[in-house]
Image 1 (cartoon, rainbow, N blue to C red):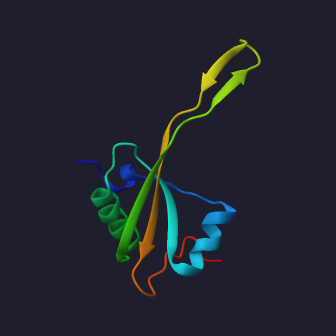
Image 2: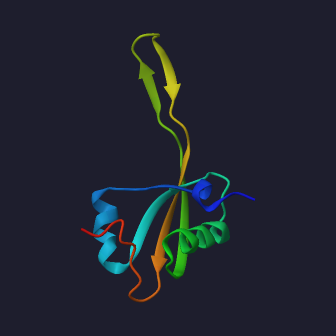
Length: 96
């Protein structure tokens, strides 16, 4: 079994994720093999909040051109979790 910090890798910081903060919705990059139940338990354990809903999405890595070796390089695939918290629960990491 993975530790909570191995499941939740990092928060996603973007304009879209900041716009959702007022609604109690947070976005994280998570381990590719993590399921919704593991993500819920990890978020609750790390940040001491109650999770209402977890949505996940898999993102394919882009194909990029490497100038030096003149080959195509594939960026890694990533998985994101969009987490909705219960009521007035907040994660202070995101608050300014």
